[in-house]
Amino acid sequence: SKQLMFHASVKNGRQYIGGNRSGKTTGGINEDIWWLTGRHPYLKLPEAPIYGRIVTVDFKNGAHKIILPQLRQWLAPSDLINGSWEDSWNGALSNLTLANGSEVEIMSHEQELDKFAGVPRHFTHFDEEPPFDIFKECKARLVDFRGRWWMTMTPVEGMTWTFEEIFEKEGELIDIIEVDIHENPHLSEEAVDELLSGYDDDE
Image 1 (cartoon, rainbow, N blue to C red):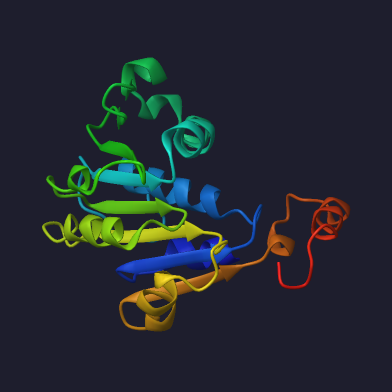
Image 2 (cartoon, one colour):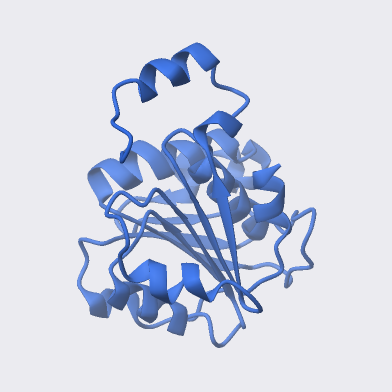
């Protein structure tokens, strides 16, 4: 139900926030794919090609261990050039091009700020909380297309800039969706209880 709220939101920005294993990244990746393929079940989108950006913590873990495997899992072969991941993915540029011409670039917090400038984008997906200057630079890339952004994150650092700049500004332009690990129907209660037993109350 929380993923439905996230996908159906018509706000310019969305913060999908919650604990580990609560399905945030999966929701974010499927939102990316619906935009890129033009098959969004809830929103009316521009015609392809759509140009997107996914910003993650780092390339080694965030991109290659989380984002790319999820894209490969959820994209249909028919969405890829010649039905092939290898024909669609450009590792040198960290760029994925679909058969319909849509493109998404993968970027990380490790890159210099000027790398986030330049071309306009229809959407940006922040998988985990970015530095504030990267967030602002990416938002500037959305102006030309009146694009949208979404952030899927676990607030491991507590009350950072996202609290005042996003969480407290929920309203006309921003939706906040909070999700709990117990709301993931694909996890057993026993496994969740075992995980949480290792945390103190504050954690």
